[in-house]
Image 1: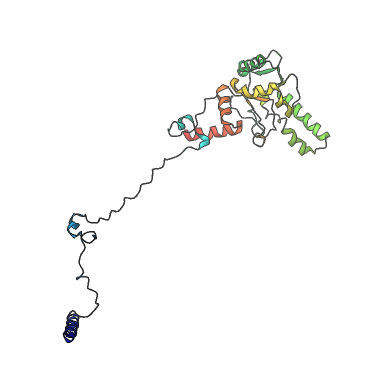
Image 2: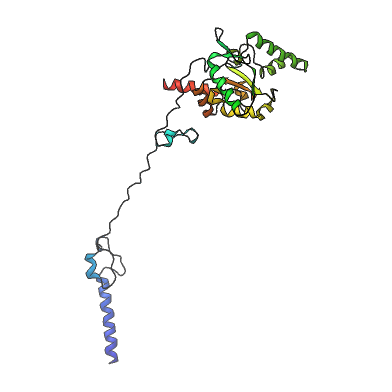
Amino acid sequence: MRWSKRAAALLASLLLLLTAVQAGGMGKEPSARERPVLNTRLTAPGEEREASKIPELTVVTPEPVKEPERAAESAKPEARTAEAASGKERKDPVFPEAEDWQILLVNPWNEMPEDYEVTLKTLPDGNKVDERAYEDLTAMLEACRKAGLQPKICSSYRTQSKQTYLYNNKIARLRNAGYSRKAAEAEAGRWVARPGTSEHQLGLALDIVSQSYQALTKKQEKTAEQKWLMEHCWEYGFILRYPNDKSEITGIGYEPWHYRYVGREVALDIRDSGLCMEEYLLLREETLEKQA
């Protein structure tokens, strides 16, 4: 009985060995052709019958995400207009129409035209201005007085000889203070324009002070009259010509008493722009040339 079991085990071993030799070697990996092809998902034991119901795996290539199209040109936040805010394409600023005399630039680098002519009209206090500014000027002074204030014109239209006298007088006083001739002329020009470069000679500029404080100093800005004029002058076609932070551009020191007439629409436009007259006119010229 023991022999029979051993004989059976030996026989089984021989049969396994013969089978392995016939198969061409033990442990050899089947070739690609011999591998089964899996057409379905792998299934758990006992689920072979349901394999045909499982759909084949499909590789889906995602479509590339399209970037949103950019607008041709986006408006800068500081330059948005009401039109841009409504979603419309931003356009160049539209400047109000103005006659040459209204926007005539006179400063240390631009002398008034030699053939410039002005028709003057005399105010009740004896001051003279260009007749085209007369009506708006009187309306502004009247409104200021109705507000309980006392504005006073201390300088208006000046002739060439008057401007020459004031300029030379300023130089003389600076020379007496120890300035050299060259330095005195440069300093004088910051406060009293050279003859031919003063807006007062156009009849469009006025120095307006407070009746209670008539000194031409920076303290003038603290008076109630100047505060009112700075806030409302544009309503009557005037601008504060030499702002505090624009001296390097205008060539003239800060004068919180000097107002220039440019007409109501232009005054409003300059006020809204936040620019001094030199900057505004440069922007106006460049924009109109672009639009032409």
